[in-house]
Image (cartoon, rainbow, N blue to C red):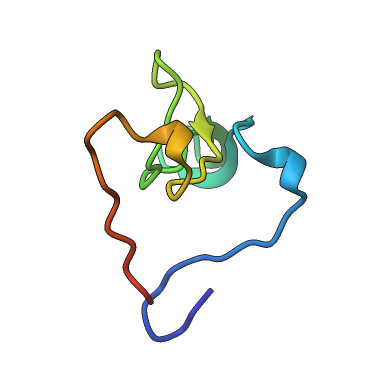
Length: 77
């Protein structure tokens, strides 16, 4: 994680492009008085499955991900 802006960065295999993923999160649940495991999407995903159940690894700079006539402004962090 970049300390100056809180952005998580990961380096992965190029074959991960367009693959879906979940997060497994352990949380304390007061009503259960226990730590439960939740499977969820990443809350700041820029691309998700049509049903919203999975996050997707997407190359936003690729022409494949942009509709005709749309240009992507890429910001340097």
